[in-house]
Image (tube, rainbow, N blue to C red; front, side, top):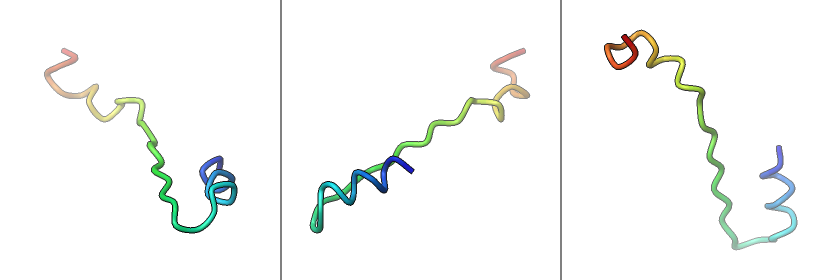
Amino acid sequence: MAQLNWTKKLGKGKKVITVAPDNGERYLSTALYQ
């Protein structure tokens, strides 16, 4: 939701990139963690 506040502050013509990292849970079943 914070990205919405930034887009309002920056105004038109600006780009906002949102990064939503995951916790890596999907990789726990791979050989990397065994």
